[in-house]
Amino acid sequence: MGNTSKQNMLWLCQCLLCLLLTLASATHGQGENPNTATIAIAGPMSGTSVSVGTQFQAGVRAAIALETDGTLLGKKLIVTEFDDRCRANIALSVAEEIVRQEPKLVIGHSCSASTLATAPVYAAQEVLQITPASTAPNITELGLKTIFRMLGRDDQQGQLAAQHILEHFPEARIGILRFPTSYSIGATEEAMQVLERAGAEIAQMTQAVASATSYLEQVLLMMEANVDVVYVVGGVLDIGVFTRQASMLRADFRIISADSLISSTFPSITGPEAHDVMFTFPAEIDNQVSPERFNEIAQAIYQHRNVEARGYALLSFAAVQAWIEGVNRAGSFAAAEVAAAIRESTIETIIGDVSFDEKGDITTDYPNFTWHIWRDGESHVME
Image (cartoon, rainbow, N blue to C red; front, top):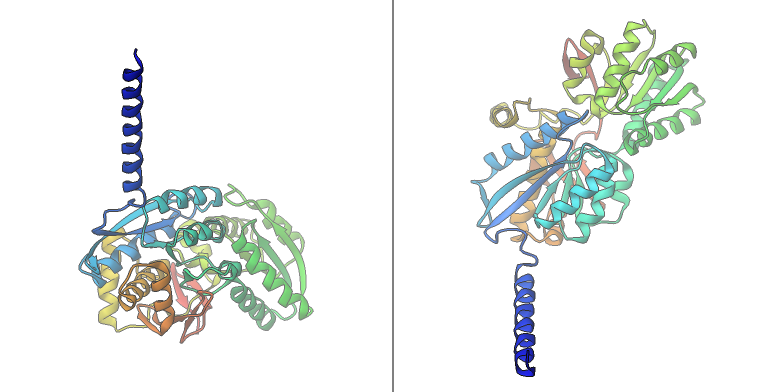
């Protein structure tokens, strides 16, 4: 090959390289059709917490159907769903996949460890994130301006649990059962601190492995310590197994828990043993709009995933409402602008009028948490 041919070949290669670089540059940052706006739902779509993921899906899709005509600011709304199985390492991979789509909103995650792992990823890529379920206090202590949550924090749940024990079990021997998660440790640590300051006796504190097939060992430990009440915080399936096995052994202690027990999965696991089990959850969030409006929303939620209009389905619905209002106020999908607009003033939602502080924590007209109780297969707000 002569020099001229070599020069022509070199020139051709350079042209091809330039063309490839130009195409790569042109497509970079276009993970989404410019005529669409993607909402990503991230949570447990399988595994022991699948009921939470199903509620996320139902609430988000129902909100889009009822609160929009399928578009927002002239863009068609697209919903995508991602399964993190409530595991932080999987959630991180999921987050990296999600941001490549350049969504306008992420509803999720559920488990606090997953949200803690992913929040910096979304913030770095300027994606707004609203979690309907994560309650670990440090989520909103990260200093991120584009994250919000639709319910209170574990320290508030732990304090409420401790106050209830001190008031209703003043001489009790107390058992604490927790799991190695941010959610469980956060709530139980706060409860133990309040109890210890009040001079209450914690007769047994034990930590169990999540997703175990049996918690007989933990039941026996509580029985041997002669505890009167057990405060247990963890996944609904795990607490369901613990409760059922405690009943099988005729354990003579009361069980109280936290917001994960809102799921109807709990009585489906325990059967009659769910009766009188108490747990903390936002108060009367299904009582904040007219019966006619609530029935309309309930039908839409059931239509999308055959779940009841309660718990995380309502919180997810409200999360989308807050985002839509923020987008309309800002006239933009830009995360920073929408976040600032959400913080501007109170927003009317299915769970009542809500506002958010600089950290992203929610404020409502009713307490962040109150007591609920399972009776005859139904959960009720305690008087």
